[in-house]
Image (cartoon, rainbow, N blue to C red; front, side):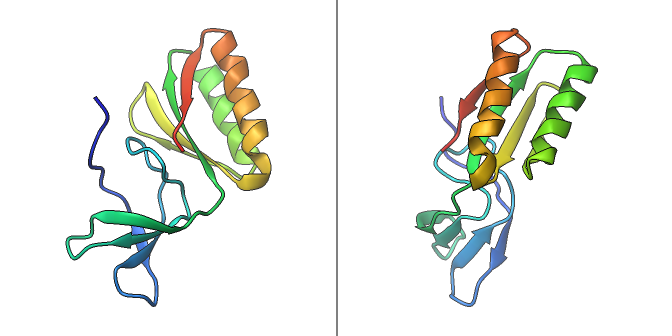
Length: 121
């Protein structure tokens, strides 16, 4: 069952109830780091005002620490970010110019049976 809510970090803009997303969403679909979001009075996201162009991937990991460190280092080298939720789950941000490269890295490890991943947006 998909999650309906997730606590997200945002940076206020000059417009009331509009924030820039400052984290990589792990459970919600359709959002990415840097998106500009409109919220209601309770800070619940109601619309994407402007997409950042970033890509979000969710990664379920079942590999040794050396493979994970290699993956994380390769993602960071492209300008991306990794936010680890647990020992077996993380969210990955890929900047617009490197999204295909990051997805290629993820596909390679998935083919080896070390991870499973999905596109979050």
